[in-house]
Image (cartoon, rainbow, N blue to C red):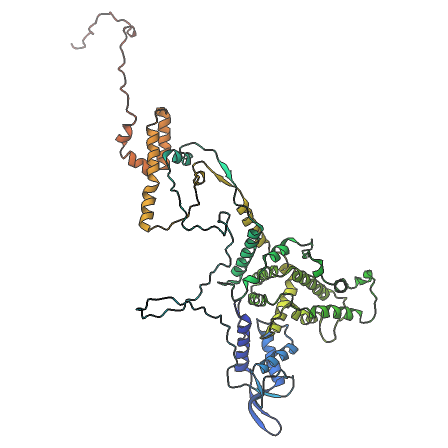
Length: 550
């Protein structure tokens, strides 16, 4: 009995339902049974179905060994209600399935559920009367990025950049000399340019956008549209859950009316600190701990909405597909828990701490006969932590799987993801940071209106790349050449630096060494004068040497 792993993505609960139904229909053993002196072929008893399906779910990577027999019976009740199975007389539609010897069979029709489809938006185009062609439906294009957060130099939303006159930027040789003065040995002065002020709404949008983008990256999805309703994500919840926390990492609420009732909090502290509850001066009697636990379970069981909320159900179910990669699953759960309302996150933190302490406390008396402490914790609080709004599919089994993983890793999951927090804080700080500008930059030119980019052809781009920057550089070179204030030594030094920085422009101006030599002509060297006093004996007559010829 193999149950393939269903990874993260949209409609994961429906995929798991169809996968389980298909395995159940194709691999459940069928045989002949007798009931009231009558034989029935290809059927099974309710107890046989519970045994086989329970083993399948326990061995599945999607559900795990925490699935109980009672939960398996609940799933078979849903199978009977959705006509996955029917009794031997063809009756279905009611959840009256029980773990007994009653006979059931599979209906001939397929019980698989279709995946929900979003309605298509048809945009009809107008054609002239002579055109015989019909318009095609235009489907909305879904962007990969979740939300585009504002940049510091983005114009306000009310500003339109259509038909704005733009004054062309003319760069003369002096301005180019300033901009490229570093290349010829001079460093100009600089000034600070302060960026546009970030509003509180801008910061909130940055937090929301980067958090959702990070979640989308961890899940490996092209879009979060079918997993999460982005409009329901509150950026203020994210910021509050990151910064308004105690030393223990528990969320601190600004609105105390949303806090846990005092009697519930006292009961949770009593069980979490057992057997040190004598310090709380609580009355002690036989079965006291069971009554305290029942009080806590009743409060959480009557919540109007699960702690992980209805609109985040698909997101958390999608994260369950990453449980084989524990590190990635913890990271995804961290981000999803940041999206919770602060009061829900606080209640979840306190509940998980209590559950973990009770399970680790060896001195804790048994809270329920027939169940281990860990199993009791999971079965009692799984429905108040995660469930779907319509209570369909496999939400109960998925809740058990999630709570089990949450109990084992609650300390890491309920922490603020440090990498995400650092990344967002650096982004906000970067947008608020001042910028250094040198004289001659574009921002030194006062324009009557902001400029905007215009798309050009490849030929125009190649022309501008080849000649657009060379003309001002050539003018700058000529200015250095004709500068009479520079000495020959300084001029040679600057020309040598210019040749090193812009060899192509320099080569075009001086194609040969002779043309470069014409700029600095060599002066004629004077002939050395013969001084009379340089001779030792200027008036000594010439004496003929003696010949060696014999």
